[in-house]
Length: 255
Image 1 (spheres, rainbow, N blue to C red):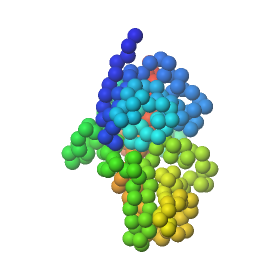
Image 2 (image 1 turned 30 degrees about the vertical axis):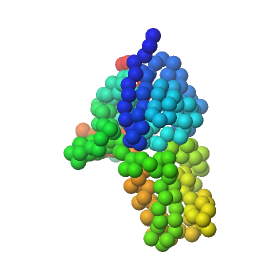
Image 3 (image 1 turned 90 degrees about the vertical axis):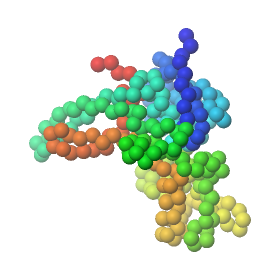
Image 4 (image 1 turned 45 degrees about the vertical axis):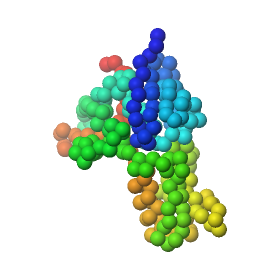
């Protein structure tokens, strides 16, 4: 049986064609060994992406090199295409000092996490989808890196985060998973005597240098948190819930 396919534009401007999720994919998504470091997601993406422009069919290695915003866009489109746009999940709240627990059911429309990436969204669209996967303002840096000169005169360059960047951070010990580690994960380099040198420590950078580097990263490689703001109807308390962690995000759960 031939499965349905769906084609869409991603934040990088690349076009991806995915097939409908099938039963065999559940083995990939529930592999406990690869779930520990999120490798199951790259394995899943390489299985469902049947074509992409300009990359063609994605191997596992190519899936690891995808820019993160494209990666999330593929996963959300796959979930909506194969299972539907409404995600139902529960959260157990603990109320008051007596620790009374009660479970609340929620629904989230996952289409609110996606824009039409073939065009720039209006200010109204951006305001109506505050948690949506953002665009890459300058997709050319995905291939070429972002080279810029700091106000101090230092010339640096870095690349957008990929699944490989995530793997680098996952393998770090907790005490080394600092804010600077996210910069190292993007392969920051410094131009020294007309040669690019990879940055492994930041002693040569001033506080102002660091602020400028972080601003560049936030601007050209914007973060996606994948959260839903849910509230406790009894107390009014709110939290940020990671929607991709919901049991029903990747698998259809019958109750």
